Every structure is written in structure tokens, then in C-alpha cells.
Length: 232
Image 1 (spheres, rainbow, N blue to C red):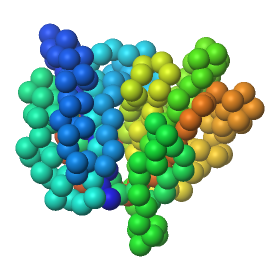
Image 2: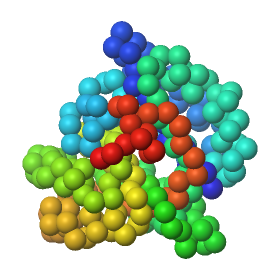
Image 3: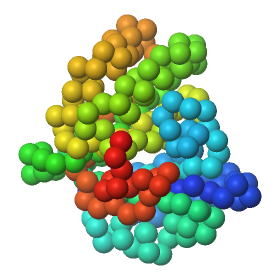
Image 4: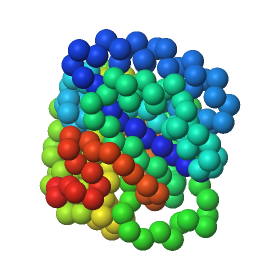
């Protein structure tokens, strides 16, 4: 399986077309029978995890059975042409799922191939949560410290906050030097491990997903940074 994520920064004057795209682009995605799963999403300010939406960064996530179908989409699709036409900066990454637990919109979006489980090198992570309405304030009060800890963690490379809904349906995409550094942050960092504990105790989420990926390819930049040139 190929998982593709594109995050594009729209020009200020073209932001209305980003909103239009979130409605119009659903049609070609829905009609594309080779696309197994898709999400059109907004992002936090500067594409950051813990900030309010700024309406400039928008994302499209798709999954494909093979590289050819993915390549055809990126070469010919109206969706990508729309993003490219109105965008001023874009980052795309192709991923292969290594592990996935949980649901996204009541679906298991990422198919795991056992032959790829023994992976070494850089890893990408997507965590996604649907937050309960009555837990939103409590969640917001705690998420910033986990995001700050992530950006300062050893092995951290790049991250972005994305989601279908800027308040209740949120996802974090991050890239790490290796699985060990990612796990050290997730389970040994006090702020993040405390968030995990509170999540369980306070039942913040009505649905959640955690997935880890091998990086197949990437191009473009996000806030001027790529996998290869960032020093975070």
C-alpha cells in the first residue's frame, strides 16, 4: 500500500479557493475507485500542531494499492492540479504502513504488509483523534506541552498539525530519525506520557488512531524545511 500526504500553503488571496476546494474536490476523490481512502484537511497556523487554524495550509491524504495508481493521481488528478495552481509552497511524502492501530471515520485506512515490519531508518507517524465535545477545553489546555516536548525531542525532524475539523478532528503528522527516538518521546517524555495517561483517565477521545510508516519518497518543503534540510 502507498499512503500519500500533501500539505500545501495557499496564497493569501486564494484562501477562498481553498475553502471551495474542500467541497468541490470531494467529488473526484469519491469517483476515483482506485483510491482506497482519502481525507481533505485543514491545518493549524503555520501547519503547526498546537495552534489555531490560519486557513493557509491545507492537506490531502490518499491511499493506493500500488505506486502506479499513486503516480497517476499525482500526474493527472484535478485535485493535485488545484492544490498546485493555488499553492505557493507544497510538501508531499509517500509512505508505506508499518503498523496501525485504531480507526479513522470508523475505518481501518492503512493495510500492513508483514514483509516490511523490520524497518530501520527514518519513520513517519500519524496520530489522529476525534475529541469529545465536552473534553475539548481540557484537551486544548494540555496539548501545547506535548507539542513543545515533541519539537525539542532528540531525533525529531518535522511535524504538522492537520485535520478534517479544526477543533474536534485532529491529526499530527511527524517524522523521526528512527523508531527508537520516536518511542523515547512517546513513552519516556514526561509531558507526552502524561498526556497519554490523561487521555485514558479522562476519556478525551471518541475515536483514535496511531500509525507508523516507512518513508518511500518526498519532495517539496513545509515552512521552508524538508526531510533532508531541516535541523530541528
